[in-house]
Length: 273
Image (cartoon, rainbow, N blue to C red; front, side, top):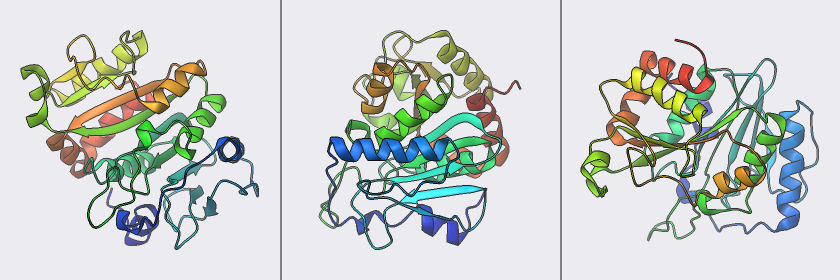
């Protein structure tokens, strides 16, 4: 779907607005976990102290709450959506919007068009630039609200699925197979489980003839072995982490094609085709 101007402005503030990067400590992580635990349980929370986040009512699109830094602040704590009412135990996340073009927009579309309970993405750039020196790579940030959000989701939905959207450049791949892939799917380990393989099969059908490769069987790179959220979730006993690396043309097709996106979303939600 096309995001309205008001919703896009709320969800996607300019990454150049980052004025410094917050460095969460253990207390901030604990506060963020309490906040997201309450939100995902459908409970109103006033416990924002120590998190650097505030609740904001979305202007349209769903019944729920946006959690972000107060207006005028931008220290890289991220943006989080939580839906109320009937939900699917699915979270869609994009830690590198901006650097991985279209992943932030795609995460928002998938959330709004599905019954996914939550979504999240970065609010500061992944890498510093001359015009925006303040940056953080959320996929390498074990102590961050983005990781606290993932852990809270896992506690609330222990049999659920949290999907992390990424983008890759075919020209930079190490092998012919990965340079021709449309998607590389992994669970952040060397041993994909049956649920991941079933998801890969579903996505292969939906995206056919575009190749969907499973790490490490068909692709030897981009397996998310050091992904901070994947590591934290596995340490907590959660097996539903899914890491999707997508080529640029696939990301563009998914953003532009509602029918393709619906079929893609059905795979993520585990809905039979």
